[in-house]
Length: 322
Image 1 (cartoon, one colour):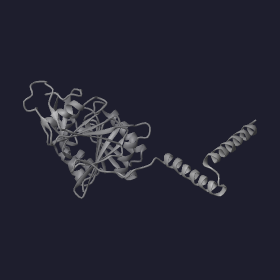
Image 2 (cartoon, one colour):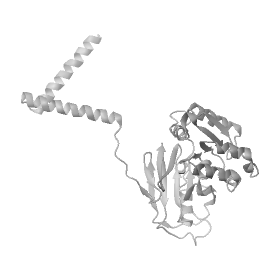
Image 3 (cartoon, helix red, strand yellow):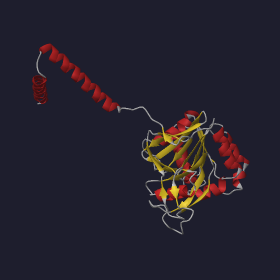
Image 4 (cartoon, helix red, strand yellow):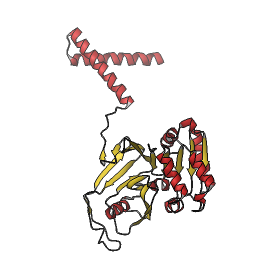
């Protein structure tokens, strides 16, 4: 069974709760986790590896190794392939996604990532490392809410998430227009936009893929299966017609069926503090019912009596403090 995909929209929390990274380490095996970090997209060199090495080890991972091909020739290196063969988790950093795809995709290293995923290893990535997980990948392009012809360009990704295109930093960098442009030109693709400090976690059970959302933001999904568009005839940078696109905005806790392209209903949950207040209120109401039945008094009279009792109790407490 294939492993989970963790598609992180960038700028994940590294200092406070670190909820997304904690879930990654847990899915990779917790204290037995051996995480391979692929920092190829980043221009920060060893510094970015040091950051994630410290993070993953502080969250309990047993080992963190760097797998950093800088050329397509490097991506044929047997030593790097061996590092992936024993990994229980793979994490691709942010940076330049076109650099990442041009070095990794279509190489033995890229196949090693796909093989690891197929045998159950979690494959995760943030920002550029998120975009490359889909079959089609945003290469580059500008912001804006309106889809326009030639607004962005697309490259091939690793294809871990088929029939989809992923964009990241989605709401924060106003990337609605460019994702709409892509699905307007390729209506067979599902458009997935992931906010910062947010992750779409894709799992497969019995042949069905589901996407759950964790983190502070939301995952936006464009389903263009029944859309009407003029992308095939629009000129230069003209605004595109995109009518009939089904929009899903999925906050944390949402689950989305990628086969049916539909929201999966979830049982209602109650915040623990709200549950405690509700329980107190229920006990008060039960006590009130018993008092009324025992003393045969009206609710209004009972409320006034209770108010006097509370007032006397507060006065006594104040005198005690003096």
